[in-house]
Image 1 (cartoon, one colour):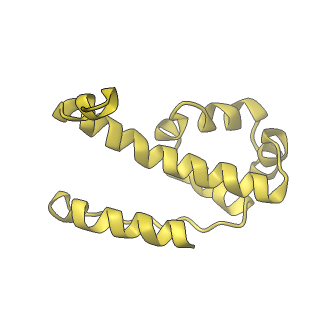
Image 2 (spheres, rainbow, N blue to C red):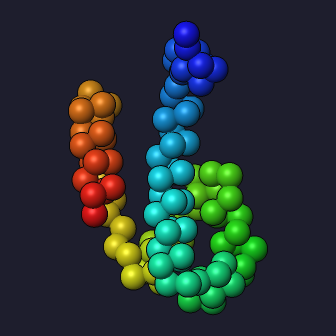
Length: 108
């Protein structure tokens, strides 16, 4: 018997949106974990980035990073002593490459 999520994922449009948002969730999760490791609040991160707490809160809630500029994401990462790597993956190879990349990131 399939659960609700599995049934929804059978719809290609829903699956594409889910996978799209999942990538941003992973990025948000990485940022939140780095903040936790440093013991930083949104306010402390905002000060380090040179923005307001509200901007940081907006970026890290409910997929907000998909609206953030690459520059802002990079500034957030640098403030947390993280490095951003930008790369493009062909749609043809995405299903092979991304699971391997996720596995490597989780092991790091």
